[in-house]
Length: 152
Image 1: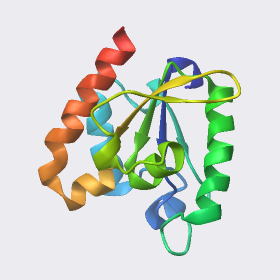
Image 2: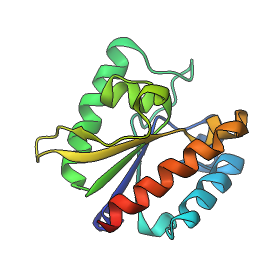
Image 3: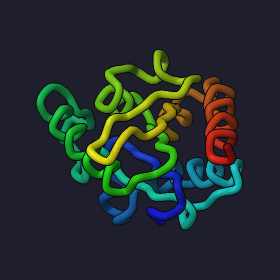
Image 4: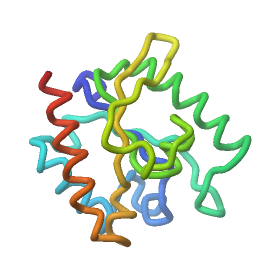
C-alpha cells in the first residue's frame, strides 16, 4: 500500500521469490512477516519494492549495475513518497547510502529524491538473519526505531 507511509526496499528477488512470484517468500518471507507483525504491520500495510526487479545470476549487484538500480530506486521512492523508507540488507544499503548495514544501522539517514528527502533506516535482511540469528537483537532494535519514527 503506497499510501501506508512505509516503504520497504529489498535488494532483488531470490530464486525462490522468482518461482513464487512474490518478494520475500518461503522461510525468509515468514520471518519478514513476523518482523512486520512485531511492529503492528503486515504486507497490506506497507509498500514493498526491490532495488532490482530481476535476479542477478551472481545474486549480487555491483558497480554500474548497482548504480543504475539505485538511480531507478531513488526515482521509485520519490514517486511513492513514503514518510519512512526501510532498507533491507547490504546490497540495498550500499546502493542507496554507500554504506554496509554494519555502518548504516542504528541511525536515521536521508535519501535524496526528485520529490524531496525521505527518512531512511537500515536493517539486516531477513535472509541475513536466518544465516546469522545472533543479529536478531540488532534487527529488533532497528524495528523499534522504525516504529518510533512512524509514530512521530
